[in-house]
Image 1 (tube, rainbow, N blue to C red):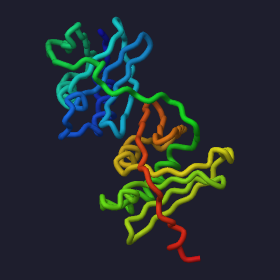
Image 2 (cartoon, one colour; image 1 turned 90 degrees about the horizontal axis):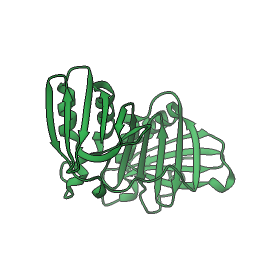
Image 3 (cartoon, rainbow, N blue to C red; image 1 turned 60 degrees about the horizontal axis):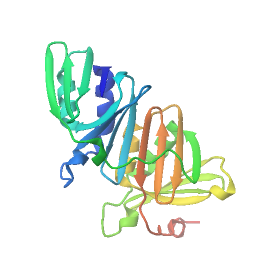
Image 4 (tube, one colour; image 1 turned 135 degrees about the horizontal axis):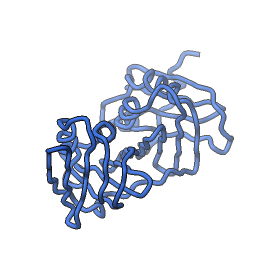
Length: 249
């Protein structure tokens, strides 16, 4: 793999994906970012097995290929480089050479074959709405999400696509937040899901105020596509409490 990329493009991409990388994983590959360079595009991907985030960046690829590098170390190096072009080249042993002006770094990576596979942007049910509307709805309910792990179904935001509306609900047993938004989707696409709190936090950080958001739901996974970013998350399994019972008529 060999490519050239500007500092700003690479750093922005790394800052987009590095947030979900943990500090106590037993799998070394989960500390790394997957860099996938094809002829037309370059993607950066990180995952903690429950949530993954993929970001496309602009780069000039002279040799296609893939590798994984420690995301925090790479971001730390790139952050200190001058604002100019960076060249990345990976050999057959997954040692990547980073060159920028007079600076040279060698970073030992791990083969991309060990990286968990990414989900495809498709789903049994798909929905579209404005990013700003979605972000504002999330903001209005996320504060009420429970942090009590013994009540795991409350550790996320309940999303219901029913009756021509998207309904979001969060509660910790003492307070409850609810917001609705009318939207168009077919009757057969009515579905409920519980989105984990970590995914909610990542979406609040990444989703913009303008542009369209695509949501794909399939089995126990949800995928959110917006701008050049794709966030995929497992959903919380279980039955959400009947929140309507506690709302005064």
